[in-house]
Length: 56
Image (cartoon, rainbow, N blue to C red; front, top):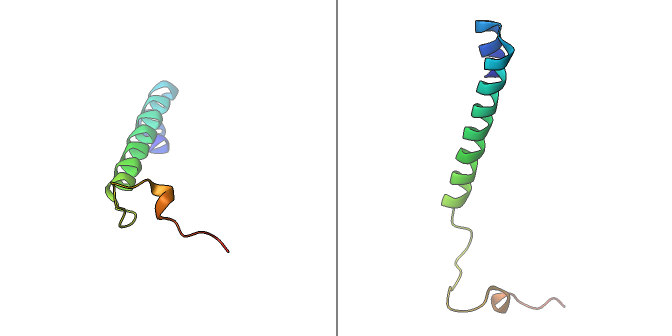
């Protein structure tokens, strides 16, 4: 995105601003998608380490 802004305006300050904003929006989008995925069938009433099987 920053390259497109640079070649469109030839201004470094706008390039850095738009690159930073794009980076933040992408990171927030990835984090939102990561939070929306359910990892496993976890019983919330017991501690998480209690559900794991011991290693032999």
